Image (cartoon, rainbow, N blue to C red; front, side, top):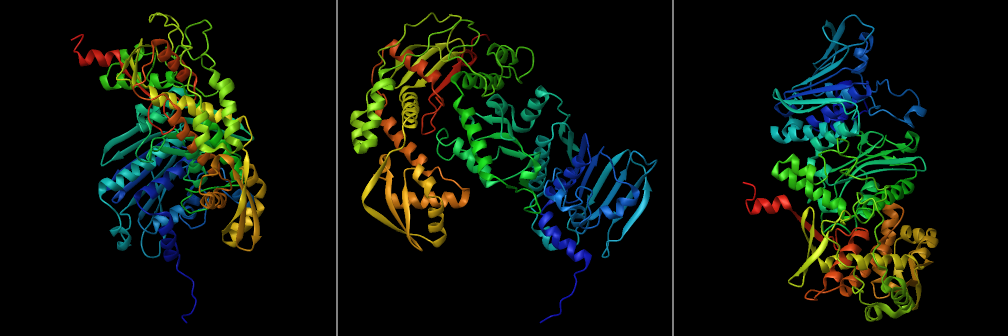
Length: 639
């Protein structure tokens, strides 16, 4: 066996660089984080050839003293933590003391810095096999400039793994984008091959913040976003979440920050997916920019060298808080929120700011005119089902017998074991006959979806409003209304369990069996009675009456898998809602059913008062708007 020997400092740093420095974007991330930790209000990043030839990061922070310059390039040297207590409550972005040493081991690095107390700046350079630091005087304002040249020049194997110049710069651009979203108080400039790509001023107020969001995430995102800000039990979640109609084919517009640090966390991703569960179509992905503020002592950031992952001390509390906040925000979205986004997008397509103002939608909330109609609304604010400018109380949607009486009896029979067939037979039809007369279209109290004027092919409802023409898929809209009412009715009652005549024996691992035994109470709350009858055997004795026809074994396995991965499970709720969605689909108004004008208006008013009415429970849109400006463009009016 070969003798054990101590690795040279250079080789040790290159090994560490394999974890910290994956590509030029990794270098930019570490250097920008150091600049922000140094109190910089301005960060300038210059890139050449995608970062392979040159990466220069200049800041106006505190700077580094001349005596500390050689130590700054040493491994495990940092000014951000000193003891174990500091490590357990890290508030800075960097703290490991590995970045500069790792970068200097695979590049030609020069660091120039000056503190406010120094009369002149100093420059330290590292190059060569022994990585000896050479210090010389230099001219530099207060702050620090780090130049990284010829990345991976001494590790050809690593350089071969780099992609094209365009691809590598796209990664750098995305890295700067994340840092700019994390710190609104700092300005950022990004240049590639002497061409300015990003130039962002510090955002001092809400208007500037939304301008930065619009510049980095696209104006359509901010036009279709709902502002949230919630606090509970020492946690604060704020930011912007896009409406479900602004979903993406890829998860490329999802930014989540914990105490200013961008992270990718499975717990957070699960909470967001759960909140968007029945409003996204198929495999679409939500868009959001969210900021979670917690006590640094309750989150461990020392999980991975890249610091992209964190571990929460009370993960379940954080998960539930994120889910409840987003779920509430999406539930409070009403058609007028969707309508403002649609009008704003129409104005953007035409390039007309006048059209934006006409639609009561400014480019960014906070400018003149915002008081009348803000671009995005906090979920904590209450909104009338009619236009807020009416100034007078408006009649509420009629209460149907379906909601008051028939639905209760329907669920009682279902929970007593009637099953899906009995539920479908007992499900009452929606009472459209209680429709209200149509007020004049030019009424001051026009509701968001306007007033029905006709039915098209027995499928769509055509409505007229000040914005233009609104087209409603009556089956999809009624499906969402019915689905939400069924969920509320189910929540009003306890989930009934039904004993199995013959208990189902289930072979599992010892870990799963122990988990089922430990969480027996939680499983009972889900309507599942599961007992451990052997080291690797479970017995299922009761299941929810609503799911008696489901695959019981697979359901329990899925619940246990969720408990192992996330510490909790919403599998029973998801399957229950899936069944309710199927029942709502079959119980909703069908195509070719002729509705009267009052019946159509009743459906529109119900949509305005129903949570998540912009999509059916399958995620399909329930309505769309064609603005007057778009109609004028079709017919060349005004030209």
